[in-house]
Image (tube, rainbow, N blue to C red; front, side, top):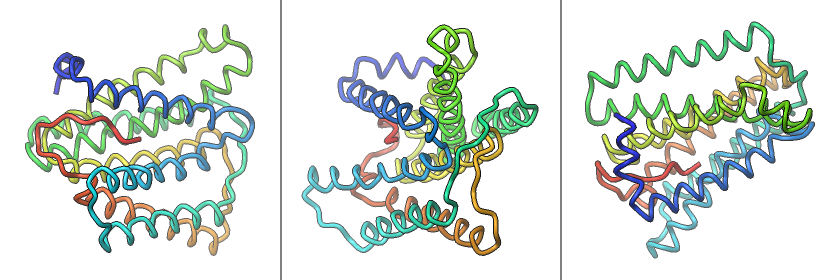
Length: 260
């Protein structure tokens, strides 16, 4: 795992096209996270539905029929996202970023990422890919939270945004997360690493929105139960879809863009 990996990828047109698509998606995501209604806990679950578009594209390109795995995964993903949003009814938070709990949250996630990378150095194959992918997903979730903060800072004008640490944190999380993801893709087939990335990102993003921005979700026992059921269904759907042969036809060592 090294930044030299990017040097090997930069001359691959397909990889560059994937990066352009990913950046375009990030811009759209930033717009969704901007403004008064850009709740991280609302946007994050919706981002997981990108797998449905990836599945549709893979179906067109491969001319393969969808099996029970794909249909079941798609239904679970959609049902899980809908159940969580309906049950939680995410509401706007206070949007403060200078609270101690913010730095505690960032520190905890950073420590977990460091631990996964450290463990990955002493492993290989599927274990290494899973650890690196988990670290990447955690960073992508943090990146989404940083993006929300940056969009709030932008409300005070471009100068205020540039004077804050947030845009630089977004860039750092994106670059390191991409490095971990590409290293995971190199270590094992995509079906091993993609579930961890796609599941970790929304979980961290939702936790970020609630704990840092004070976003509100319904907390009555019945709603918490439905929210948990929705998240579980969403994650199971993600795992089923990412293990589909349509989305994971690649061999270890091949470099792919992160399908976010």
